[in-house]
Image (tube, rainbow, N blue to C red; front, side, top):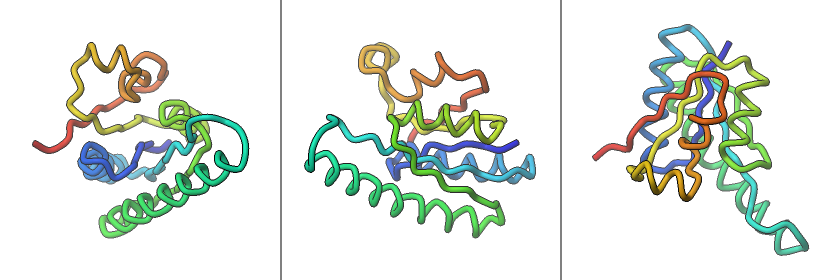
Length: 138
């Protein structure tokens, strides 16, 4: 089993990383760091350039998360998945037999999350494993 974390260096995901490291350490399980890298649109050279830039941003963000987990003695696996964040997290959770999916939130109202389809909102409705939503620091 593993703990799966969606991480993108947003304020919510930074706090969620701290929680995910604590949960991973408590259960003695590895931490799977996931970055959903699907760019908007789908055609042509502009798409490829955009996709490459998003993947590079993901690699940079996940490097910082790996360093934090290493400092805490928590083993990590890194996945940059060409899918929207919620889909990427669900795929990783399935592959790694996740105990829990952890994501940060942005202080969105429940209505706004429902209307815009926020990642935590989608996960709460689609995941077959528990989802832990961590609010950003005030």
